[in-house]
Image (cartoon, rainbow, N blue to C red; front, side, top):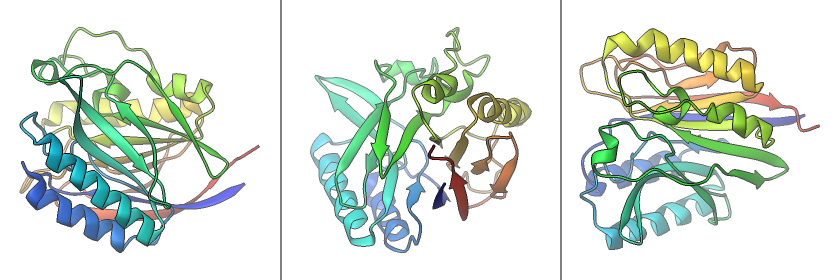
Length: 242
């Protein structure tokens, strides 16, 4: 068994890096755990109007902070490759190295007005653990957000050996989706038999419709942030490495 401390950050995602980056660096600097996960598009803001050059500079700052704090961070960001924009999670290790990236595979119909779907579902090997990342609609393929097939990506990650799934979210406040998101996370974790660690974006003065927290392989919340406001959580978990 591996004993790990995971931390999630439920932060308000501003529309620019000037406001988001200092807060991300502060959270990383003061993190005492092994992993810290941030919401979807937490660095650049949830749009495609970001500077490629300044975004790469921000990535380098985040890598340096991870190295100084010796923590592995899952960062939500916009990214471009060959002129195409993606919604991306980047995994930086405690050594400051880029372990890998995940590009959102099931963007919603609204997302697809400005971004492209990713092309590959990856797992990452780190400190004798196998990790996977999903972003927002990748997990639950929400009805009404586009006529896209549910590829059961969490189950696919488990079949690839993932023991932890980090789920970065920016799902908004529509209350009609709350119970679907909650039950979906429970069933995905139960089916996949692994922990799902979530971080959603806070919305000022409103309750978000998907919790930030840790879902156990039994489909039970082990810790959960309040739905309204900015919060962090930290939890020690045991992961079967056999």
